[in-house]
Length: 73
Image 1: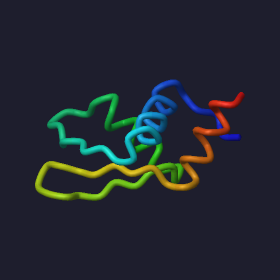
Image 2 (image 1 turned 30 degrees about the horizontal axis):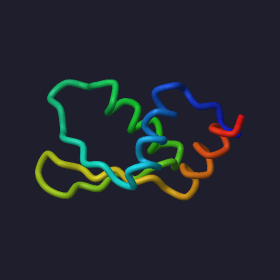
Image 3 (image 1 turned 60 degrees about the horizontal axis):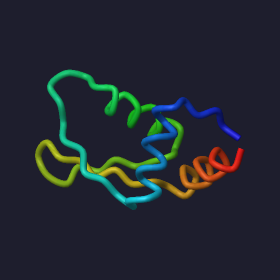
Image 4 (image 1 turned 180 degrees about the vertical axis):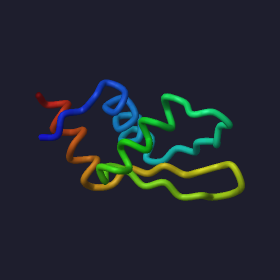
């Protein structure tokens, strides 16, 4: 199992419960965007631009398995 940081587990669990979230762009880096980028780099989620300044964030199957295995530990 991949080692999840607390903020990564929080984002993945939020996505597991909601299915998809919309996230707005920020002028300065935020913890949320850094965490999204970390999770995307590991293949746990996808980020798609839906309109200027708004992105859809969706959990991948790999991300779902990762967060489910972390929840059972």
